[in-house]
Image (cartoon, rainbow over all chains, first blue to last red; front, side):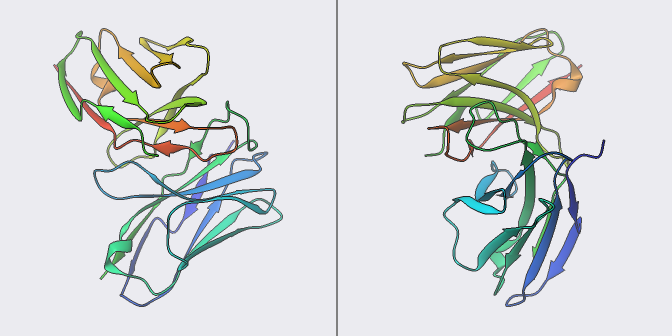
Length: 115
Length: 110
């Protein structure tokens, strides 16, 4: 079975531009979470979606938005890019939401560079 | 609330043991442990729930002390393949997102 897939793997943008990152969860998983990982730091929570509804939002500006589609895939959008948005963006899927034993399965991430 | 991990980095020789700690200032509902190798995605190791249970994964085990709001990851007889950055992720309740610590970089040398 395929794991979590993310596209693109690498992206270079300039300040002020917009970017869309995509994620396909493991088959059967209904929850998708997005994390931002800056080099040398742990993943920082951005959003979690379950059954197409937002279930959690981290401390990120409104320039960041996301959505989940009926097939449970997800998009993360970032507007008006800043240099500080340069990071590895990780998508993680899990079977459900709200249970303590929900394991997260991460994709390989999208490396975003903002110049 | 981001959990605090210690140490930040550790270097081991093959066969040596190590302990990585993860603590929180808030009551914990669960603790998750992940390992991330350079250039790769984090990989799930184990989950510990309230109750002070201990779990094992190969020669890697962990404990969860609910009263102290901390968890420890034990790596015994380390192997070269154990090298990577270990992250703990904590949940304060069932419906809160997983919050990760800054990680502990483990290097195992021959």
